[in-house]
Image 1 (cartoon, protein in one colour):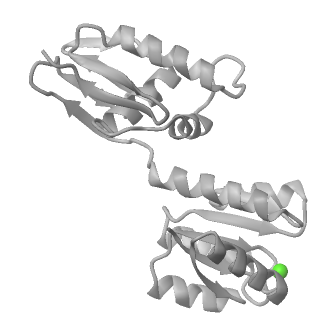
Image 2 (image 1 turned 30 degrees about the vertical axis):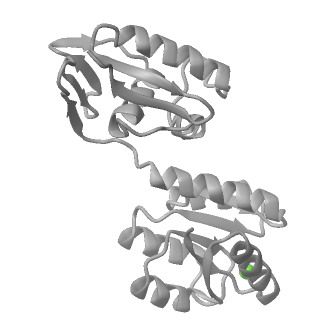
Length: 235
Ligand code: CA
């Protein structure tokens, strides 16, 4: 599973978190203050950090800023005792990926942590990419524009279709789950109302993308119970 660092000065909470997350299958290392956290972060590779904001000496916010300048991609879940909106905004601005206000339930922590770690494993597609298998039309994506082309023809895509297609293309030949898509969409500005998207809506987007890829030699296969996979259709 994942190697997590817990930075928390409250011994009782630190031990409880450590025990629960170890039980959930993670490898857990903990630090009671910012200084020890920094030493650990310099010597060890972690998959995620649980960071209390209210720490003695070096504050959690200082640790967060320090961490972001060195390890920009490391997922950080901030724990805060105060439920002040300012704290959260400041924490998110300083680069926290998510936050939890104390007191929180272990179930909520596990869910948020799981989502954060999954997001981190699906890095946002930021480059350009070409898919040219035998018997298929060349599919090209450039995230800087962003724009996709099938052969020389630009594809008209909405933002959600774009992020769905880039997820499928960067994972071509592998299954992406519904959760992967919904998570990718969470970080996108929504279409229309920006409201949440259910699995039924996902079917609609898959259907639209299939139509746009018609005659390309590429197909989005529905892998029952698992998700979707981009593949070249056999001739
Ligand atoms: Ca504290």
